[in-house]
Image (tube, rainbow, N blue to C red):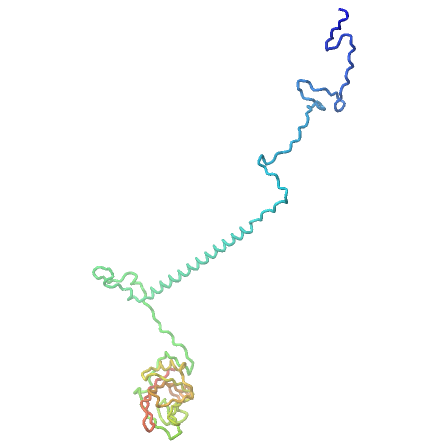
Length: 315
């Protein structure tokens, strides 16, 4: 009917209404038309037809997981000291201990071998008679046959030790002395001289009243009676008249009386060993001697009785 509104044209526009002006196209990058993405959700194309997508939001990386500990805000910790030097020192000490142990073991082995060798030498040196079994050694019937070890044992070999060399005028206490006189003991009677005088005595012959050059001792009267001896003679006192020349020789170097010593003839049980002068014996061409003098008595008039024994010193 007239006056009614005209029906709308397709698209919502009324018939006869002027059409709206078309919208200017929106240009995209590079002047290309930019169209809104279709409603179907197709990807938006970028330049060159490549799909255009928005860059993802920057998300900070997560480190350490849920239990991560935030870094300390203070100064960095000092690095732990290296332990290499300590380990090298321990290794060197262990090597040194090992070397010492080896050295001790070698030394102990050497000592054991020496002891074994010494034992073997002692067994070989044992007298063969010591290896003979006795009647009760376990053999039935009293069989005393030696074992194989006993038959091969070597008897001990003993050698006499060489006599040490002595210089002329020196005595060897281990020398073999021979008796000078026969009989071996000579009793001598020594009469005293006048007051404050002396009488020479030669012990080599023996003889009283000899010349001064041959005298080995003197009987001196001077407020008593005394024995004095030649300065080259050696004199020692002995505790007994029952002595051997080796006993005298052993004391000459350790207990010799001083050359100017005067000995009272009335000394109880007076016994002396006298080694005569070596030079005087060489000069006279006689044997060098050791003389044992023992005073047997002194008479009222001063006469002295002595017993003498003498031994020749070996050349």
